[in-house]
Length: 604
Figure 1 (tube, rainbow, N blue to C red):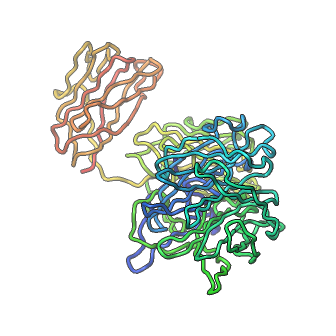
Figure 2: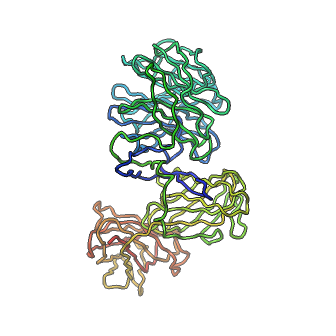
Figure 3: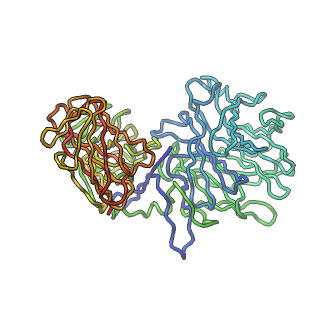
């Protein structure tokens, strides 16, 4: 899944949202930094960090769902990995409540997880209720895979554990290969030895009544001969992370104090501690991006020990941690770079008034002249159709607005968002419903061509929208237009030509072929088909010289309302060989369309 928040600016105030992007390298003489938060494609919380035998560090995180209506909606888990602490890859979703056969019928409540590895199998532990009465039916579920970040299958749950407040599992492997399970919430903390099958108990459950002000979020690790247990407390207003130490994995524990102060914009706190490439790190979450405690993001900072084994309080930073290896592939943009992002290159701008013909509203949103209002209503939306995505990829969305609320957020969906999670767009207040000074930007993904759709979903605060613009990075390309009455166009299989239009493409076996097409330097080009159609939709199979698979491409042409209404324009990418000797063939037979022009855009 994928995808997406970004930095925006309004009257000098930094606004934050997030986006999916390949992170860029810093200057050669400046250490690359992770930035905080480190995961920006989706909202994540409760990070569980582990280093496996492949040398990568993996973080298993819960997923805050946007738009937020509370933590009961959390129902998915993602995994992120890195080999240098700076360039992170979203490995994708590994489990959701739909995958749990014994789970609560309403779903949700997939809270803080953990993971372990034993004898070639990865074990994923997650809390989930089994009944509508969620607080008294908690189970610790177990899913397994032979991969660290994919193909997990739920095997069941651990029998014999308490059902009330049993959340936040943590699994610890001792030096002798013995595994221990820790869990607890609502002020009660438990620990127990796991059986060899990693799903049963091997001994009595021990309650840790000695922990000072325990709330939830247990994490256990070992350094040298000393065992550490970290947890969140009940500090009024916002949790802190405390820790205790012991000479035994099941205590008794000696309280050592606070190691993480309350995090920004979140009442909850949850974390993990791990050693990687000679450094110790603490992962945690905050609400930096959203300013909303139910839309959190994972962060990381250095962890330091004193000579006696006690832990120094972690300093929460915006810069994060330095790289411990060379740059590598990433799908998460560094937040540190993100807040300094420049959009100067997005100069090919198209503006859309809110009363334009391609702008529709619904779900309770209303239109007053050129302004869309009542976007605070749950389910309200603005939809823009027929958006030009150029050759596809990143586009800059800008929303102009006024808002009397202190903070509003929209969910943005766009055609090019393959992950399907949408994008977060923050719209801070402007001081009044008629103060139209608001301007929020964020990068989104669009498909190639002019049939993109962008939808702005409301329901989290109000804003009156006065305009939207979409800006692209201009590309230098060769654009060649082919009329269909040229000598390089042939028809067959029942297709006919009338002047400059190819007709009767509804007949099975019908086709027309375009020869001598310029593919420029070769590779991906954009084909645009201009047409008219009275059918609801027609589908064509496109074959081209550069298609190594030989499977061709599917191209759907929505109806235009009449056989002479030449308003249809559909684009997609195809592959061509270098040079001007390419052949493109469009095969009909699935609905009709009268086609009068073909446009090819390629890189020189």
